[in-house]
Amino acid sequence: MTNAIVVTIENGIQNLKINRPEKKNALTQEMYGILAKSLRDAEQNPEIRVSVITGTEDSFTSGNDIMDFIQNPASGEDAPVIQFLYALAEIQKPLIAAVNGLAIGIGTTMLLHCDLVYASENASFALPFVNLALVPEAASSFLLPRMLGHQRAAELLLLGENFSANTALDAGIVNAVTTPDQVEETAMAAALKLSKKAPEAVRLTKSLMKGNSEQVKASMQTELQAFSSRLTSPEAMEAMQAFMERRLPDFSKFS
Image 1: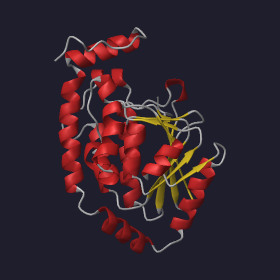
Image 2 (image 1 turned 180 degrees about the vertical axis):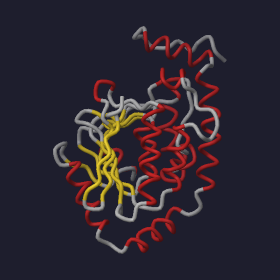
Image 3 (image 1 turned 90 degrees about the vertical axis):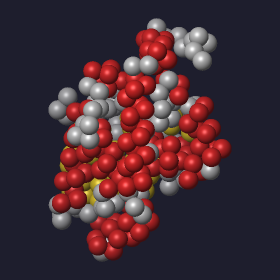
Image 4 (image 1 turned 135 degrees about the vertical axis):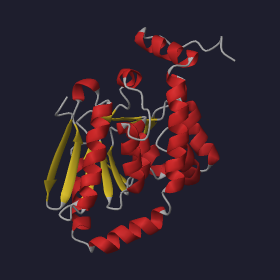
């Protein structure tokens, strides 16, 4: 899985490509660790002005690799997934995402921490945590109501249904919708523009817009505690069993 995240640096731009297409780019703890380290390294490297996260043709990422998460549960702040989430909250340099295909779970919630997001018209977003008997992560339960209002956030987080690139655009989750063959080009063009601007002014402007990251990190911690406990809950076991058996989960016996 060593090539599951491909990191390249050119023209002041760090490109982080999620590259596990055979698993729809589902993220493992190892992959989270590489992403977290790469974002932290970019902060310390004066030659890097901006980072861009991309996926493959049919998937940005389908979310957490649930079996990997069960086998390697996040425990403590050194866990790779937690380090990745903290990096998203804390990094000062610009972060851009180019989204093709599936953007499920963390594939959508990480976008809330990006400064610019470009999606192809074939992108499909979802926050299916409740459908899996889980809870949101990446501070999405904190950020989405503030972005969209309670009712629109509840529609996305409680119903957990897929939504289109145009819906994401209307919600302010993405900046623009392009054709599939243009989405990375559009993101890289924006990254190149940012790479030529005064770096300290860019960092300070981002910091002023985002404000204090501690509240976001506190929300991440609360969500992760609940998420970890939910993974072994009877409801989650039923949801995962139903997924493996390709049937709808039956939650009628739970209260």
